[in-house]
Length: 104
Image (tube, rainbow, N blue to C red):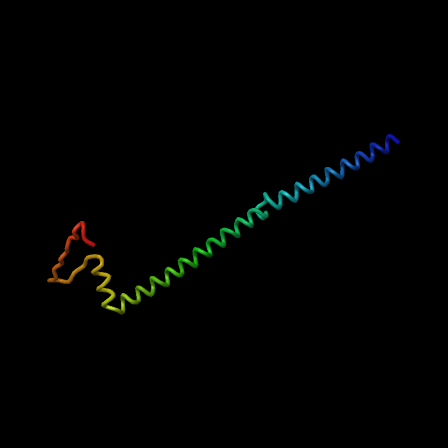
């Protein structure tokens, strides 16, 4: 009877050790390994963020392309933008007026 108790105890300990190693093995592959759940979810977040940035850059690129096309085809727009940065034609004079402090 004493042998049976020892044998059952050893079997139970063996089962616990087996399930412990199985659980550790699964945890390793789920959370620590390169293909683990945490790294995959982090990679998915990065991909989503990068796709959002790409979309924003594509929209910005389209706007700039349209503006560039307009500047190339519309001389009035080109002149307007040039004047915004202070460019003038030959022979023109610029008059600048100071605003008084109390006036709107």
